Length: 252
Image 1 (cartoon, rainbow, N blue to C red):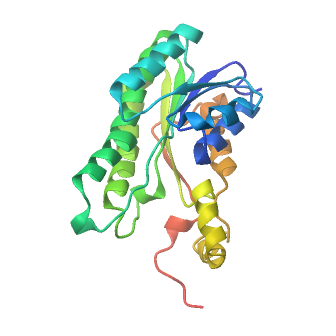
Image 2: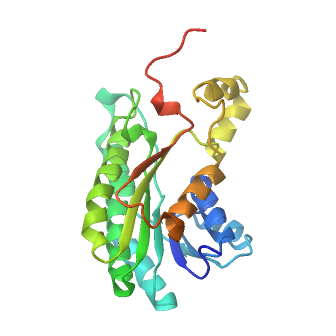
């Protein structure tokens, strides 16, 4: 199996896109460490029935990140992959967007990902191999009012991916970013259930008439973690069913 016996950390892997990544990579044989803040999800992660561990982690807390990687090093003595998936989507009026929400987005989406990558790089350096995948967003390229700070953090993830690919390439560590679009997570499912008209609206935003399932992103990330993508590093790859490629709405 392409990821057999490889140790992969997935931050925020208990639900949504993160869970899709855990399931896709686990199906290919990886041993997954789910680094998740919400301990209520530990039971559902354990129920996957694969080689999956749960370590309570808050990526906004540098000490929590340090404990995560120390624990992985103690348990396995190696690290083959890191998926920086943990993130927040907080929106609001630009002129009134509060400082505490700016700081929270920064600490989780960007600083947390950078610190995790630093720790991962140190472990991977010992084995002179590894893969880091940063989950950014199509908001890194095109956005909408109210998403300013969220877009800034995701754009920052895409930018730091390019530099990290060169900083870590000397150790045979590959670094890429995946930019999903709208994805049918638990939150989106609740929105559509409350307002069924949204299903057609959301579908209409995409060239293929569909938007992502978490497993769509999961399989893409699993590919990047595998040796099948050995020639891919420093890339920022969009997976949004054409959502961000439209210049302007097409009149019907």
